[in-house]
Image 1 (cartoon, rainbow, N blue to C red):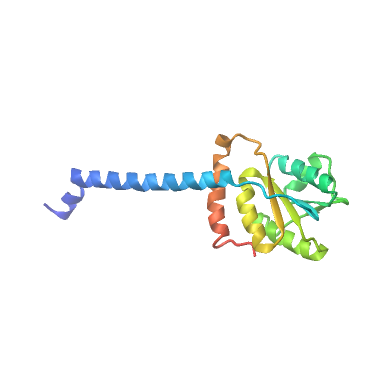
Image 2 (tube, rainbow, N blue to C red):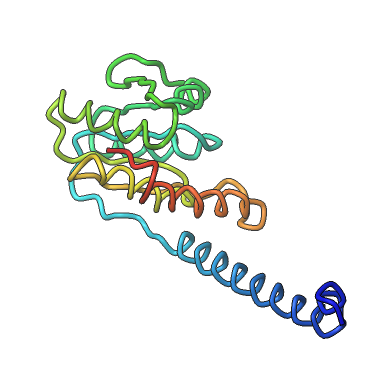
Length: 185
């Protein structure tokens, strides 16, 4: 029997099917545990705040939470990136006590760098950052790469979890990048 014939034998095909099934099962289990970890991440506790920063993205839930917190703590509100448009829709303008800032790059790691620079410039010691629930873990990771005193809170996801599965999957991959090649600071 030639080498080519052994490769095509029914026993060999069965071995490949079993091997690929095991690989697929391991990948599904890893993805599932990573997604459940991302969903289980809770909010930090707010003790005091010097400023509330709303990250870009979402459907207005981030701005609503940020606005509520800024009013509660009587501190300035910073809208970042896409949150500026959401703020306008909610009736906010880029005048005191609301600031509008555009990070470079326009991504969470750019927002972390921007928040750190603003905190240093303005002497903010305790920064509260609002985002959406699925984004809390990676946001906290990136913000804490640049700042010591940062609290991250997540607004309720606008869509039910089955519709956000892509967001949680993207966050899992982006979190791996945030601890390795795409660090904020």
